[in-house]
Image (cartoon, rainbow, N blue to C red):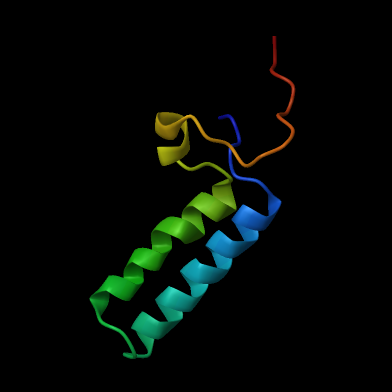
Length: 67
């Protein structure tokens, strides 16, 4: 899998995901807070499925491909 989520983007995604899930778990926000799983997973796996569709990447260096 090709990485397309860079450093700051990754940190922000993980942070937002954890905060949303925590807010939902404590009942501060509704069930929609569990949608924080999406940015959390895209940050952890460093891949956002929407980025290729938009032709974007925040990852500055791509790892070498295995040949």
